[in-house]
Image (cartoon, rainbow, N blue to C red; front, side, top):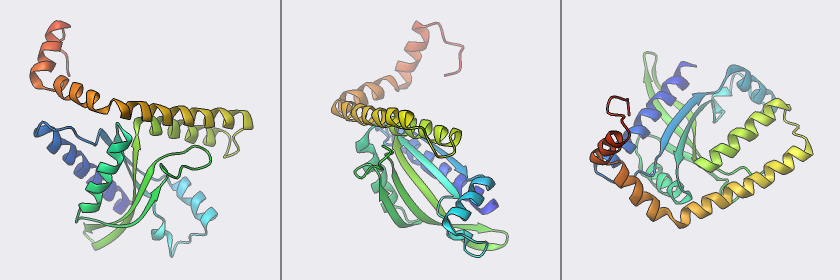
Length: 212
């Protein structure tokens, strides 16, 4: 699993570095935060059985290494996507748009499959990785659905499934509404994130000695 751990670690550092570069220039960053994980062995085995992977072709599985780039607005998804397309340190081999073509369940996200090169003590290696780009609303819904799928073994009761579908519509509407006032939100956040504004806020609230 070490090559996948290394891949996730390097990609997280790089994408967090992109966010820092925007903020250092006083610009709005389309990247809100970045998370990553290596698929659990049990999950790998289950998917291998389901999709017909063997020891010989297991490296073809695309999501053993996974990185999630969180954004605030749907428009930010496309900005992050352009950033990914311009990078020279990995190769995009597939894109899956579940935002304009959401799944029947209501799942929305944008998936980018990449070939990422790493150097190890055993030599050069190419690792497949999946990068998911989601708004906070998309991620909240997907996290809940994932938990329910786990609880019910993939067979979510129809009444719960109907509520999930309704919640997906509400999440999409929330993204739409936030997009309508995107400029106002961005301006407010840039003002509030300035060092002086943070210091003033801390003084007003008696938090001078608290970690920010």
